Every structure is written in structure tokens, then in C-alpha cells.
Image (cartoon, rainbow, N blue to C red):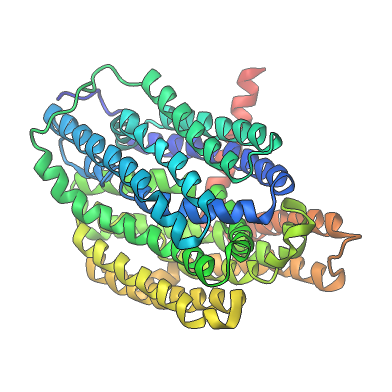
Length: 496
């Protein structure tokens, strides 16, 4: 199938990052507003019920596209038959998973002794019937780094989720309001994708060539499934061993890390794999691809480490502001989870690197090992309570980082020394950014009388310290920050 001209790739990558960032930050604002309001409209038990059902839905969700997006992105020259075959695989897998979740919902409800868990899972399963309608279109947009449809669909999903969730929560629907909002977001996203679908993409799926897609997807979907299983394992284990209310407190603490994911990872993730894959398709050697990987890791850690560190130090006011007084049991858990996330950041882009190099099987095996470590870490220290379980996740993150670094070195020759050179300025930026915040909290410990002032002042100090450290230490990310500021000023002037 003939594709439109690709245009100027370097400029497109930067524009794609800017659009992805716009989507991320609008979603972040809506997400924070939703958390603030829903945490006061719903009780911990509602969140616990939804959290357990959502883990099962997310396990299925991790393979609902069966790796077709990644297959299409890394394919050197997809034809019309390739796009049709990918569409057929998405339809078959997505609908099968939706039906499977509905069938399994009574068993899940009995396992946790709560009928509500099964009811919520049935509603969440309905979202899987929307996925096939827009999946291939989104894959094409990501492959070509044309992020406008991706951003528009995501914005529609975030807005629909926000509005529907609040309406149903205010009407007293409890955990079900969260499930209905999730499905509404999926439906809104699909409608926008269909409206912006490129005319040259084939409309109807076909099984011709589906075998190749399935062979790739068998490996790629395992990576996503293992990753989601490891992410959801703590909530499943805690929910069965401790009850649904402790799950809710764990989820609120994890929610601070999720805010970081919305702030940073969801802006970087949709762009890094296509950018690395384009290098690979263009014939770049492993050294060139590794250079892009190291530069991306340096930028990512310069963002991630200060933000996660700031969330850990300001956990008391952050939980109080975002969730309210009924969620303060999440405070001691949050810093430990932020530490576990920070440990994993230096290798966060490893999967994208391995995918771009076509090492899907190696990535699959690595992800399985990393997530088994995560499950083991949770189980071994769960007798010590929620905080103990979180420290088990830190230990698992350290072991997983070691395994991942070995795989990246074998695949692209990225040594520990090269990784350190790429991230040492990020570590210095983090220390310089966090020191004023730590002094503030030590001098003025947060309490019910001052948490708004401490939280606000801490956030301002973190941002100012971060910008000053980037400039003073000449971190490469400073060039991107100044370029973004110039672009924003130019946009404002043109509007005038």
C-alpha cells in the first residue's frame, strides 16, 4: 500500500513530543481534578472493589491488541494485506477477551466474596468491544508520528471519563461509577479515531497474512501481560490477604506514582518506540540506536527523579490535598512506592529499544523475569504489612534493573558506564532540586494547619530548583526546555 510522503522526520519527532505532552498535561489536570473530587464522593471500600476488578480487566487489556500496534510500527514496509491482517487479529482478540471477562466475572466475585467485584468487571469488559474499531488507525498515526488523532482521541477519553465518573458518583453509584466512566472514555476515544481516520487505510479486516501478525503478537503480548500482571499483583495479593480497604489505601499511594506516569511517561512513551524504530528501519547501526536510547534515558531521568523525589518528600500534604483526610493511611506507603518507581526509571526505555531491534522474544523473557521478581517481592514481605510489601517492590525493582541492564548490554552494547554517563547529570539535578524541598519539610513539618502552604511552597521550590539545576549543570534537557519555551512564545505571538 502506498503511503503518504513522510516529510521531515526530525521536526516531526519534536512536534509529536509536544502534542503528546499537551495530551498528557490536559489529562493530568483532569485526572487530578477527578481524584480530588471522587476521593471525597466515594468511600475506600468503593475504590477497593473497583481496584480488584480493574486488575483483572487490565490483565486482559494488556493483550487486547495482541502486539499489533508494535508489529505495525516496527514493520519495514506494511502492505494493504498487512494492515487488514492486523485489523482481523485485533477484532478476534479484543472480542474474545471481552466475552472471557464476562464469563469469569462470577468466579472472581466468589473468590473475593463480593458480588460487586463481578458486576464492575462485567461493565469494564464492555470496553473491549470498542478497541478493534480504532486500534489500527492509532498504530498508523504512531508509526508516522502523526500525533494529532492520537491526542484528540485521548483528550476525548479523558474528558468523557471525568464527566461521566463525577455524574454517576454524585448519584450514589459507588464503585460502578468508576467502571461506567472507564467504558465511556473508551467509547469517546473510538468515535474520535473513526472521525479522523485516514482515507487510505483499508476499512475491512482479512485473515490473509494473519499468521505472521499472530507469531509476533504471541511474543509481544506476553511482554505486556507479564508487565500488567506484575503491576497488578500487589493489589490482588493484598486484596485477598488483607481485604479491599487496604487495597484502596495502597491504590491511593500508587496513585501518586500514576500522577507521575501521566506527567512524564505518557508523553514520552508513545513517541520513543516509533523514533527508535525509524532509526532501525533507516539502517542505523546499534551504536546509533543506543545513542538515541541513552539520550532519551538522560532526559527521562532528569524529569523523573526530581518529580518522584518531590512526591516522596511531600507525601503528607500531597495525599491530604488530593485525596482528603480519610486517606492518610496511604502517607507512609507513598514514599516507598516512589522510590521503587525511581529505581526502575533508568531502564524504562529498555523495552522500546529491544522492540526497535526486533528482539521481541528476548524482551518477552526479560519482562517475565522482572515481573516474577515483583510478585515474589510482594509475597515474601507481605507479613510485615503494607509498608513491608512496598519495600519488597523496591528490592524487586533493584533486581529487575540489574537484569534489564544485562539485556540492554547484550542487545545494543550499552554498558553500565555509558548509562552512568547518560544519567549522572540527572542525579545531580535531582539532588539540587530536592534539597530545598527537604529543608522546607524539616523546618516546617506538614500538619492539618499548614499542609496547603507546605505543599504549595514545596511544589514551587521543586520547579524553580529543577530549572536552575538544569541550567547550572548544563543538562541536555535544558536545550529542550528553552526550545519549547521559544515555540510557545512564537505560538502566542502568532495568535496575537
